[in-house]
Structure formats: structure tokens, C-alpha cells
Image 1 (spheres, rainbow, N blue to C red):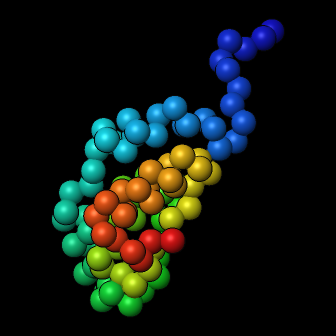
Image 2: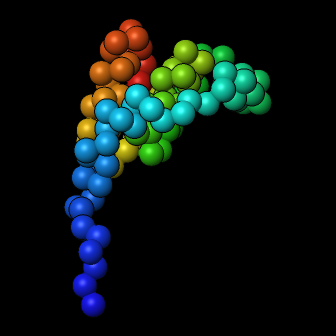
Length: 95
């Protein structure tokens, strides 16, 4: 049997969807970030990890609450879009 589903190398599965994902992925409610800040005592000094960051949907919102966000994603294009969005919003504490 052969599969009709194309096989993509790691890091290329979502390459063609980067701009759509960044523009149309639903965002989390502001209350989510308020809850995180209260629950974990975020005071602008912490370092946090955003695994599977995509274009930084969570990282961009967490950045004002912590000292540094480390965003990780296997898709290079997602990280590039995240960098672009961070620069567009003047956010400088995301790695």
C-alpha cells in the first residue's frame, strides 16, 4: 500500500501556512494572561519558555509580563514571522 498523503521533512510541514496561521489562529482571551500573571506571580523578572511557539501568539502576549520569553518551534518560517511581529510591536525580550 502507498499513502496518498505527502511526506514533509521535519520543519517544513507548516511552511506554506505561516502567514495564514499568524493572521487567523484564534487568540487567547486577555483573562488567560491575567490568570497566568496572578497564578505565577509574574512581575517582569521571570524567564519563560513557549514550546511550539508558532509565530509567537502566546510569546507576544507574555512578553510584557516577564523578563524574557524563549520561543521554540521546529518550523523556521514560524519563528521568522514571530520575529517580524515582535519587531512590528516593538517587543525586544523574545529570543
